[in-house]
Each structure stands twice: as structure tokens, then as C-alpha cells.
Amino acid sequence: VSRENYFVQECYWGSFSRSYVLPTSVDSDNADAQLKNGILTVTIPKLSKTRARKLSIKTN
Image 1 (tube, rainbow, N blue to C red):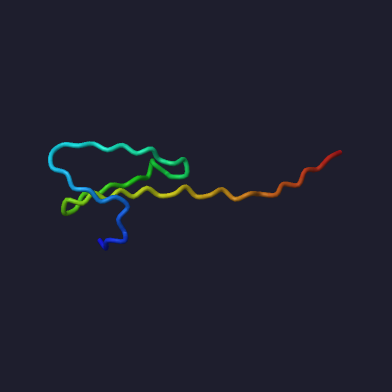
Image 2 (spheres, rainbow, N blue to C red):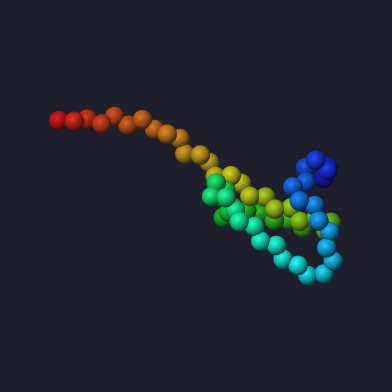
């Protein structure tokens, strides 16, 4: 992983936990986490934006 792609880089020994508040614009149900070579990578996709629609309103 190249250095410019890091969001957070930390180094700890022993037990720890971390919590983050996610924005409402992410799809947390489809989050993915992978631990490889001691590096935890968490990927959370953005929600697709709903497109605005034009509706014709007919009156009598």
C-alpha cells in the first residue's frame, strides 16, 4: 500500500478497539473488512444517489 493512500496509520501492541461514526451516505450493510499481513482494510461503499424525477401532475 502506497503511503499516500493511507487515511489513518497507527501502530499498537496488545488489545484495542476503535469506533467511528459513519456518514449517512454510506452503505454499511455492504461493508467489508480484510486483515492481511497485519493491515486491516475496511471498505464501505457509498450509497447510490437517487436521481430526481420530473412528474407531470394532471388536474381536472
